[in-house]
Image 1: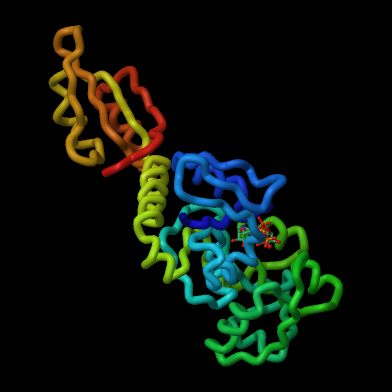
Image 2 (image 1 turned 180 degrees about the vertical axis):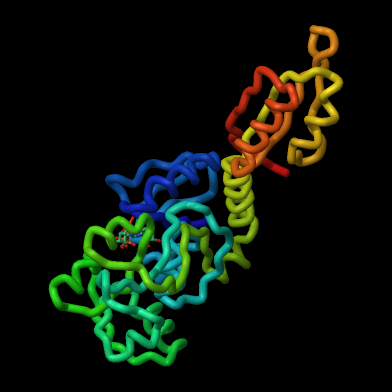
Length: 283
Ligand code: PRT
């Protein structure tokens, strides 16, 4: 059996649980419990605090986990990242009050910096040979310069709204982070079959989310041209329509190319274009 840790509540909770469910794991929501048995997979889900998960992974209490990569880096643990999951994207940045000149890390020399990420910040300061005093705060870091507690902050940023509202400007990005599937290295070796099975399912779900199934009708003499437009996996499926001189083409397209491809297909003469989400993708 494998023990999978996910965040109990917070920014990662919903997406983590959805990912496990999309992978076919029948798991309860963890609202009233810290531990739940997966009914149709040899696994147990542990609902924990995101910031505690690296330690649980390191100690082998959890074999595998979904957590923010920034927390793994901050806790400086020897844990394997199995897969990047593409959600909860953010960056750890240094910000200073608007209007305060900042020409690079050297400007932080002798300054007070408030953060909840002392290890990551210290690494950055060391790298740039900067001596600054770090003020450890567990939350609402962005308020620190306003109340005279610090000259700068180092915190997670996603939209940048919180910085803006607090009159701060992002100056340096220390690291970029997203949710990851991470594993205890011993578990990775000893429970490789179950972990690989879960990772395989996760990869197919993520791949499917990035792609769409497209089908449309097209005159036969345009099939070759349309094939050139489609960034296909192998070769598009072409089926004859009952109406003479027309075919139906099916393919898979990447979400990123979606609108460009759609535009070109319309110009090429495609009609009745249908775009369908894909649930799982094994290629
Ligand atoms: O309590 P627990 O230990 O379980 O959770 P946590 O303290 O790690 O906090 P939580 O649930 O807020 O964040 C979980 C993870 O989500 C983080 O470790 C990151 O990996 C990821 N994440 C992604 C973020 C953000 N985006 C984010 N914007 N975590 C925090 N923020 C905060 C940031 O600290 C700042 O206060 O949101 C504010 C800035 O947001 P914007 O959109 O205004 O820039």
